Image (cartoon, rainbow, N blue to C red):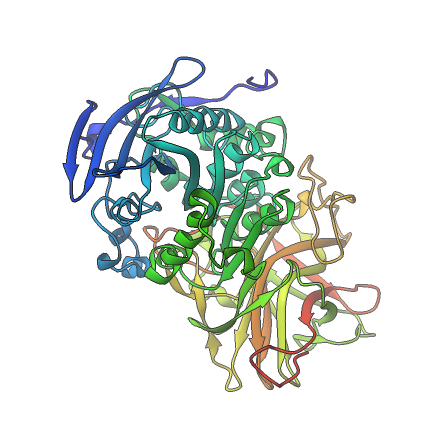
Length: 570
């Protein structure tokens, strides 16, 4: 039932024909060993019809399990990775022309005894109704769709869900509704809190990726949710945003959850939070540091996906029950790192250490500097006004490791800040790595880039109020319920969540913390990534350190031995 405390603002959809939509109409064909039914009408509980394409074995002698790809991007749209830098790492020979963007390849799965169903979600393309994204209502649609599938005469009654990004996010909402025939889910990098992980990073509105995304999900003959308008109408976390958060405690189906350290600013945080909070007794986590679509479609990982679904949808007695509960990659640099097995997330043997900021030396120190210092930089409201030499408009602090050290987990940056000439401030944080010679060490970044950071963080200072019950020393949890403006000449402490990461530093290598008033990583407009080109910044930002100003970076040092090495870390 829709929450009466708010109204969804909608906009006219974009005519589907503007993006090569073939039109609506049932067709049944046999293609490459598949029986393909296009535009199958599936009724929802309110009478609205969703349209789906069903791919299943043409010569099946037994009923088969079904895999659902739940998407707003158009079930008729094939390979789309060419729009991204270097095809986002996805090789064309890995997938067939039947592959939905961010979804499974029907040709592969049907050949292994599955049905693959591509759905145009409510209100998109030819499906009826008004489109509302990532909501509890979408969970209800998913429940109805799963149960309809399970009742088909060709289906074994076992239904799974798979896919990346939107196709993963929807799984949280649908699994939380507990459809009886949903047998397993595989959310491959899917945020779970739209406010904190998509729309408002640290309370700062995201206005770079979200308009591009709105365009891509607005092909409709009807009306669609206007996400930008809802962001303006709901700048704080309220009942509207609560509908975008699934009740993760209700998810109890087997789950293979995948995250990437590279997806700072979109899916990483929410995927890990969901893994921690779902109630599934049979759940596994894989965290890599590479490009998400490439990893999803890479043949070796597809075989791992099939092992998971073979076990839970076909009853295959394979190695899945013996998989390590957690497998993560400890990165050295771009596409260089070691995977290892762990028992839990976060790692229980982590020891958190404070590295104190010293503005006088631009360094991070093991103990609080006795003398006070301050670092300041000019802040600009509009990214375009920031001077070409914008890298000078920042504060940075370095720490050189005396021995090999692994940092895996959450970091937190505590700052004492002051704004001169303003009553609020937007803070952008990056943690970076430099080698012994002082060269920047890049990592995979966002969806397809190759010069990313160790980790990122954000905060609008007026959003600094903490939820004391949910916050931990290493992970502050912001309430985002009201604005607490700054007072002239009064420094205040803020705690900034740095999104999780895993990085190994060798002796002599450097960790750098960068603080500035605009996005630290900037790209051409057409490169899809999280961005905040418009801020509330003005005047000068001041960071106070030393003495009573205990500004520090809390880092997660992993104790113990690397299973692949005799060297002790930490």
